[in-house]
Length: 323
Image (cartoon, rainbow, N blue to C red; front, side):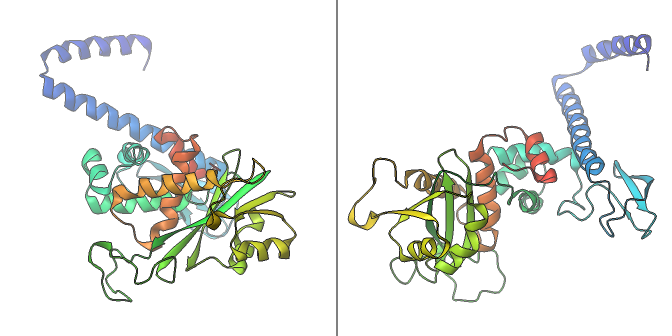
């Protein structure tokens, strides 16, 4: 459309807008917003397709265009003969209503509940639940690594939950219930968090009960830079891990009331992460243990501060950008 045609159309639109009621204007504005949201969403998805440029089935590079499916360019591989688009092989491959993706991701940035996000975006609550975990399945492991300098490591515990499960492996508890014994035990999920003083963090679900040296050996070495100083509490598992790996280690005797060692060794940063996560989690009235990694990734995206718009969150999920 050239400039003259656009100006003529613009004049016609102005004349029509004068005749519309307030409700009609709101509906028209909502329609324009949906179109804009869909165009932005498809643009981000297609950018992922241009970046990969490989067949997800056989990793072949001999491709050709093969039509458009739900607004996305489809390709066919000359080597295996299978067709695909930019989302094939991802948890978001068969999610429709893409004009509502960005409004829904804005609800996630606002930490809205399943029903709150469903009402705000006009989708069913079951769809809202599925979308939440589809998006976070891709983004949950995106972490800015490695951790350097003084690295604080500590674990926190949540009571194991089988919320939503149709087949419980234990007697049901009313309204979440409480553990049968005091202190962390086999009824608790252990969440290990390691963070340095620059704000980088990494977290792990190590299993049920107190963390062990073997679990530390599996989780921590890949995320620690050479020459780090590991600051922990006085648990024997950390001492055994540091001795076995040769990592410099300082312990804070929290059980005896000690809070700071040599004015710089403390656990305040990692304990702050624990507090923010647990306070934030309360709004969801309990989450199933199997979904804890997704919620940890969601909270990490909010804490990192580099994901401020739904477009950035969608890019982080599609391109697996470290947060």
